[in-house]
Amino acid sequence: MTRTLVLGGARSGKSAHAERLAAQAGKEVIYIATAGAGDGEMAQRIALHRAQRPAHWTTVEEKLALPQALATWRAPHRVVLVDCLTLWLSNLLFDGGADYPDVGAIELPSRFHAERTALLAELTQPRGDVIFVANEVGMGIVPYGAITRAYADEAGRLNQAVAALCDRAVFVAAGLPLVLKGEPC
Image (cartoon, rainbow, N blue to C red; front, side, top):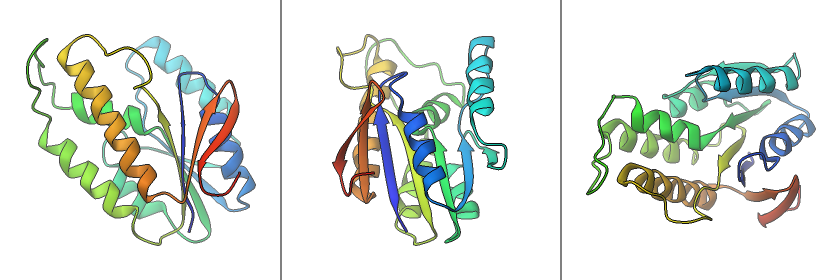
């Protein structure tokens, strides 16, 4: 069982790198997509991703119950590619329709905490290979607004927690992978 985290900024090539890793694994590929088409631009992005994936890969769309989807689809003869953790995080933060304040403390939804805990627990189970894609959002200026800062903080915490449990972590910039942890890929 190999667990890999592929990090990078927007349009860094992280998804393409993760898809190459999945294809090279020589196993059945299950692609768990966490994005939802909330508007036309996002629908176009999803369509582009779908068109770029091999037709024989199984796609599972799961915006919220990622740990359960992993438990269902991970197996020794498969590699599960999750794209992406940061979209999943935003889905959890905004699923309940909370009206977050512009300033002050943010109380995160209880479902967020439960799903995050379940995800990290699932990663300790030897069910099969998994590759996570995540955005590295904390490399710029401190975001404006309480929920945006909370999102950046939680994305960083989630990336750290997942990386700690992964065998390999790769940072992708300009389409070039830099191995942060584990064997080169």
